[in-house]
Image (cartoon, rainbow, N blue to C red):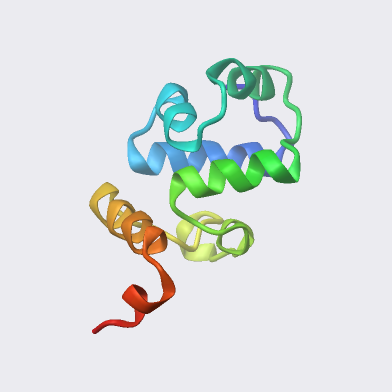
Length: 102
């Protein structure tokens, strides 16, 4: 993927590699057309906020988590396994009362 000088695309690429995801998997998880994602990378263009929100949702993180940095993790503060991502996504689908149950 061509991500020269594009920190946002580099971060998306890093998060996908971290999870062992392909661009196709990112498209499926985020609900964004595969062609849109591949075009974004091949043209080295920034995603819109709406697209970035959907990508982050698919990755199981918030936009604020996406932009957090931690020098120890090469610009990514959130390092989670695929299983942990599934747990986070399941939790976020719960209503507020169910989230509070301990």
